[in-house]
Length: 158
Image 1: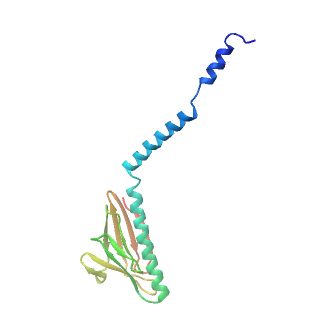
Image 2 (image 1 turned 180 degrees about the vertical axis):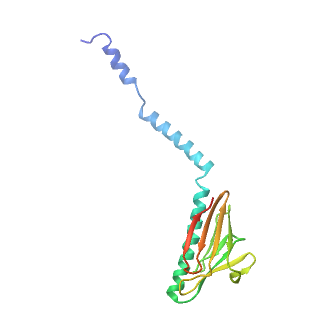
Image 3 (image 1 turned 120 degrees about the vertical axis):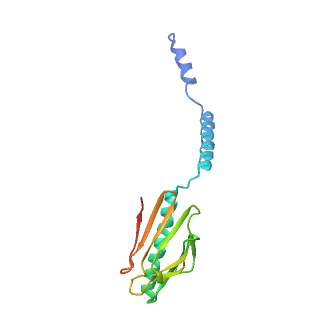
């Protein structure tokens, strides 16, 4: 025996909610929309790409210093600001993201041309010294190379 209203509540409870198929369709539509949004906006963050390029160049400079000490020979990193590129101690050419630029300040004896120069590390760990500034839009990063110790430091600009 059922009470009045009890049968109605059973029927309503079966119809309440979404089916699995409806949920799958909604999730598929949301996934497509998110995919289009990511493709349209892109996942690149200028701050991250500039920081990555700065860290890569700083690592190359530190590697050159270590190689100079280990081999007991001077090691140089060639830097081409006009191309936004540099050569690693192993001779591999690295470049900045296309939207970034590079500025080199070094002693005149290390300038090969007006737009190119070297950072040299000596076997005792010292260096020719200098500063490299990388910019992308309003973001700026600086790499400092201490002439006495050869220490490579990275700082964010304003």
